[in-house]
Image 1 (spheres, helix red, strand yellow):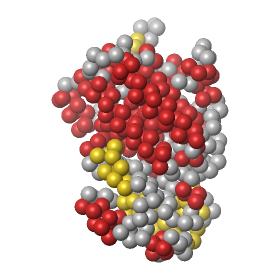
Image 2 (image 1 turned 90 degrees about the vertical axis):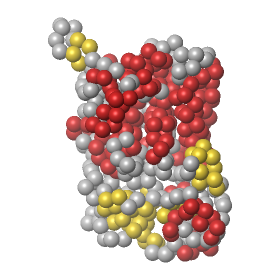
Image 3 (image 1 turned 120 degrees about the vertical axis):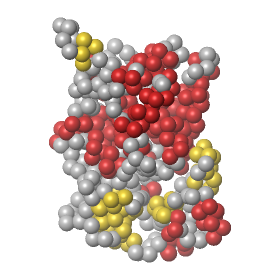
Image 4 (image 1 turned 30 degrees about the vertical axis):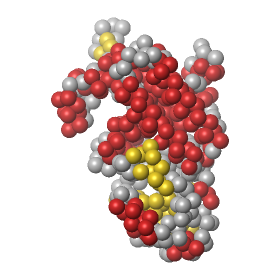
Length: 411
């Protein structure tokens, strides 16, 4: 399947992934398998749909990275996030509040295990007006993916617990979804100041972690509440809440393994999605976000095991999406390598018309890992020429091409 601009869409093409209603992201507008006609194109234009996934015979390696059940499961998480963020202030029982969430996470993990090559965090087209809710859902989804990948690491980090409890993804995902619950108790002026300056050192804004912890204590699993309290603790000790050292010296945050592993996972998931969605008018390209997270100063914030896992889960360039090469040609990403994120294999297609007849179009593959004089300059129309990066040796993933959701024993 290929991700194409709506203006490139032609009658006869077949939708490969469900199209969700732009104003109601929990509602399927068109199902996979629907054949596009002129009326469909006109209606999608009226709804400001920018792009669609279409079937493309001959590119099955792309198909393996995408899954309608996984996408619908992720969207179900969005629905649950909407309800959860409204329910946290209600004095209802834990069973009433979180039963649906537990079921949703269990169903999602089963779907991901059944389709491991589609267990990825990919670029999406979430409307900006759902940013707060989609951020909560995205952090929960990404935390779930990391937790699934690092089952062995979770057990070693939580040695006192049996394997089932040590790898409890429901607790991890719940803490991830509710990590910013305390923001609802901040003064509006504090939130406005944060939106304008994004100053993490603001004491008034930092209170949201304690407020969220107090709001959720007694309502959710204590570990999930602790995740909310510590999701801004950084691996190098530069986070918060801070406390005085044993000798009464300057205050510092928790450091290294002193931070609960679930909180460490949510920290990297939160920082990733904040960089992606909160600091610009549209989601930033994944390659730009990963370039920031793996840079020297930012990199020190994260457990290197978790950072390696993130790079196994998030492609710098989503398979099936369009990029522009330094040759001036448009191409589509075919496969990706976590060890060399910015040099995927791509395919150049000059004419998409054969897709209207269900035929494979003429094409030419370019493997950027081999063709060193060619690089990617634009992703989804955004200039990313300054975002290309190579990984420091200490965080290069051990995996090869793509993701295998079997536990990465990255000790």
